[in-house]
Length: 481
Ligand code: BG6
View (cartoon, rainbow, N blue to C red):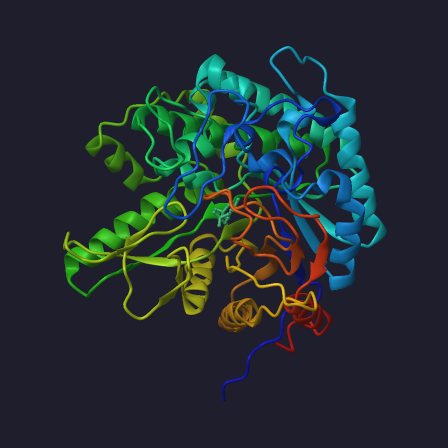
């Protein structure tokens, strides 16, 4: 007999955002410029540009975003009304250490997060805090080409010490880096690594130097391990999560060439960082990949020791899509989050050409749980879609409800399979600025924000149909989908 298990008691139903996509207030209360602040608007087909510093006359969506900085009380009250048990947010590094001369942290920046955590506590919502989510302080780009330099690693640890000490009684769950594996692909250079080569103008299509990129990734994995060690000394109760952008890979056909290609891609893009962060050393297949691609990076004995020591406690990942790998160069392609791949004829895509694959989530959950045998959280998942505000002000987003319902059903299947899934923080619980295109119209939220792609709008918050639906899901602990 086939009976599905229930979601466990205390399951963390939640929502997720990132500072640079919601806070705005880019220069308020002493905040410095971050790399997100120098990315212009774009759209599907028209890439976001990267400017060297702030250029007058350009529109930068992150500057105001949805102005969470001034709306956090109202927004958290809405999260509470929805019933959220967990809220994943990130800290804007440039609010805490605004520029290269800041030896002491900016008190005003720290106070902002004090207030956010107080507000969450008021409603019993557990914070899950990402220390670094695509917003390196911009001065590091000009000074040392971002994370390719160890200088950034040292400064990141200074930031961690400040945050872990200040919030040691407010936050238990930390993620050291959002989607750390973004640096396994060229797209990660800028957004994730703060690496900007001469000639790079656009967020997509960046000049790439794999040596620097993998050095940056190494620096981040060492930084993560050191952060774990530092954090546990400050509060042994802290729990640290990895965070992988999981672009699940299928072979396009059962041809062994396709199967092998898919396996290599999965290992390097999806497994590599998780293996280092959870098993404490570079995996064997990475060494061959480095050799064959002439990647030479500096890994010291001290690095190896710290990687072993600072392993993460739980595994988290973002899941939006799956792709296929094909050895045939003529196979039709689809685009995607950090990478695209061969088109899967059995799947539908959203307007931005991301393949929708709820069953792939069950497959992925089994894949990662089998690999690490650790508690797992899905820390991003959602449908980017254009919404219509009806004449009466309502937003009927049944497509988003359907998408989320199907993914949650597959989560339940995975739990029944035996996967220890402990949380789900739906991405963009409130509409946010899209990371890849800078649009507002690529909406993920269960809460609508009145703002368009060019910065017009009242910023008014409205509950979409999905708000009420998700509220019911949480209230019934996933029984009523
Ligand atoms: C993830 C990022 O890769 O994808 C988020 O961590 C991002 O920051 C999300 O917003 C969705 O991507 P996009 O481009 O639709 O905003």
